Amino acid sequence: PVIRGTTTDSREIIATGAGRQHLTAVRLSHILFATEELAQTSLLKLKSSAIPFEELAKQISNCAETRDDGGQIGWISVLGDNNEHLDLIFPKAAREKTVQITTKPGDIIFVESTRGFHLVQVVDCML
Image (cartoon, rainbow, N blue to C red; front, side, top):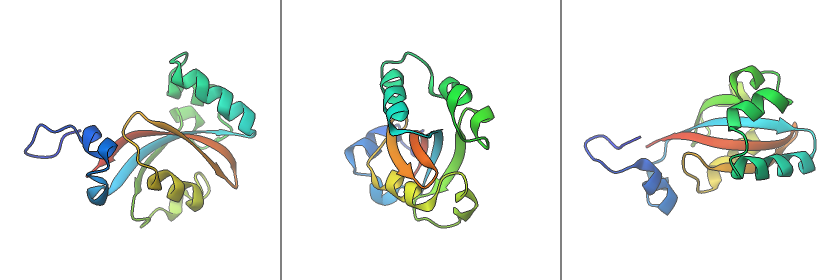
């Protein structure tokens, strides 16, 4: 993703924190786990590139709503507006934790919610 009219990669802007104030939305995928231990073990496998995120989501995610789509949640507003439709899939507290962490596309983070333990991949960002 590139800011219109420039050749600056938005991943660089987000990674440095310089563009956080301009970030409007992030596109996310997730894998839902019942236990923290399984989530942490899976995170290590993902970080070592042993398996692609989408494949792991299809194989073991406890989220029936997103499993078949490789864990795709879709775009969420950073401001928290109009995300209520995601409450059953990815609860509000987990969304808020996810957008508060400085991340860039490709990053995978761990968050806990009332549904369980999520590994969340930042797929893209919108400035």
